[in-house]
Length: 289
Ligand code: SF4
Image (cartoon, rainbow, N blue to C red):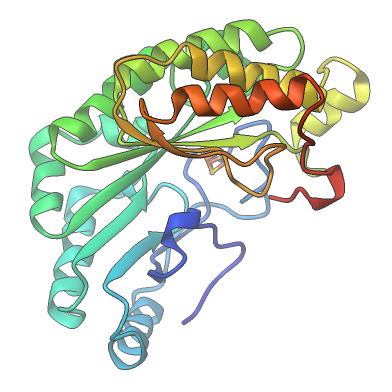
């Protein structure tokens, strides 16, 4: 396979064929994200993609899932996406589920009918970066959508019959906005009704605008305990959700994984144990992105 630059995939796609059809991210402005800072968004050379299809046809026959990389593949035109999906059906007929990243903007650019057509061709799951449901936080970090636009995008994915996975980023409001970040993120998730919530914890990357703000002192990072209190606040304000909930990313201070509503109380109890000193957090040197 030919991979250009940093290729990022969700943890749940660890066993999937990773087929890179674009490079970078079409937005590439989020102040906390260093993933594609050295790249401009581009569609990969069709000749290279054709070679990768050939590689997958020969060597990836046991992998039934395929992840179309990089960031925000859904931003491509419907015609181009149809081309990729038809090629997957034709050349890799054993693949039965295809997933990709889709920003709220990319989702909003598609009609429900267009999403349904992609579903009929094998699209199974859309990973959307919510990060926060608080507009002030979203504006500060330069996400490309408001909370309401994120909700509408998430609801469109669900209406099309697709599995919606959303990420939330703990600590993104810093000390100043932690309460609003927690409460408004929970409210947004309640309205969006995702199938899966993946919670990550902010880690500052050197090549990002947010790192400069931390150095200048205009953004104050949460301590591990403040981060867990924020997580407690989000979880305790979630209601009416039936979904997978994972806060076990490598960046976490406390790995939690289960289902809502079944495990909601268990999660809160585990966090309380840490806050009261009866359970320890993951040490800083073992955290990673
Ligand atoms: S967080 Fe997502 S949308 Fe924002 S710059 Fe990074 S890859 Fe792009």
